[in-house]
Every structure is written in C-alpha cells, then in structure tokens.
Length: 240
Ligand SMILES: [Zn+2]
Image (tube, rainbow, N blue to C red; front, side, top):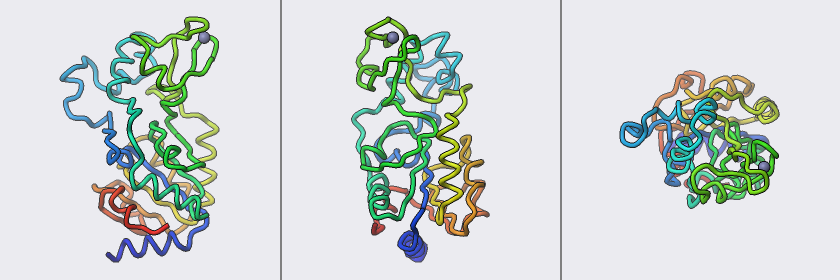
C-alpha cells in the first residue's frame, strides 16, 4: 500500500514526530467512546453523557455521575493495542517526541510511552476536593456510591476535565510547544470535532500532516497524507 509506505518513510526520517490521538485509538482496546454510544442514555440514564459528565452535574448529583463514570468511563482491565505499543516503540527509537491524547485511560503509559500529554486528564489520578489527598482508580472504582476521602470525608473527584471545565494550562502549552517543534504530525482516531483538537493542529508548521481516520474529517484538505483504516491495524503494520 503506497500510503503506508509513505508514512513508514516519514516516520523513519523523523526525529520529533508528534502523535495526536482521540477515542478511536482506544476502541480497539475495547473502550467505547462514551460520547457516541448510541441510545446509551435512553436505556439507563435520564441525561445525555455531556450533561452527566459536567462540572455542575457532578456538584449537583455526584452519585449519578459516579454511576455513569464507573460504567462507561472506567475501564481498568483494558490493555494497550498495536497503536499504543507502536507509539511507545517509536518513542524509544528516538523518532516520536510526544503523544498528545484526548483519552483518559492511561493506555499509552501502560504501553511504555513516557511523554504523554493528557489534554482531558486521567482516570488514574483522583483527589479529595477538601484536603487534596490522592487516590488511585481502584479506590474510586471500588468505593460504594460516592467515593470519599478516608482522612477527611471529602468527596473524591477524578482528575478528568469535565464539560464546563477548562483544560490544564500547562498541559495545553506543552502540547502546543511539541506540535510547533514537530517534523511530522500524525493525527489518529479522532474526527477532530472535539475541542481543542482542531485548534491544536493549526500550530503545526511542517508539511507532513498525516490523518488516520476511518471517516473524513474537516481537515482532510489540509492533510499531506490520509489513511482510512483502523488505527490499531494500520500501526501494527509499521516498523519502529
Ligand atoms: Zn480529604
């Protein structure tokens, strides 16, 4: 496949590539995109995901928030797939400078990637809203109802960016810096519709913008290379 060869060549020549990924990167690890599960809230939730996963809803009804969160957003048994593993290999080989991700599942780190910029936070970091004590994801998963701090009784909140909340400034700035310095930008598993994905790729200055997505994105006309395949299957064919 001609496109795959081209991507391979560009990766071979790269020294500071950045991978920008979305929910599609984790679907092959069995993690569905909670935004796009059809009829999800019709079945067992009275509100759409965007409402439940918002700051004001968390404050108003943390119990219902956690019911949704545990069922649809906490996938602690998921394993990295070929895409995660290949990106970790590329980092070790000195070709990839950073992974910028919209995912909160920690699978890039589990696969061995070290520079991972998690725009929307991580389910693996949780903290007490009163005394700021940290808790792991298992603590949140196993708590009955609303997880509470074992020291002060405060509500424990995941370090996940909810709707109505802003992204972490430091993470965002680092993502911009890495993308500006990138000699290759590979975007995968995202329709580029979720903020701030679209804004971020505008910082790329090179002429090797690669889009890997099964469906067209609003940025296809700006891409230098487009591959329409499942990202895990595709990345599995690449050499590091
Ligand atoms: Zn506490």
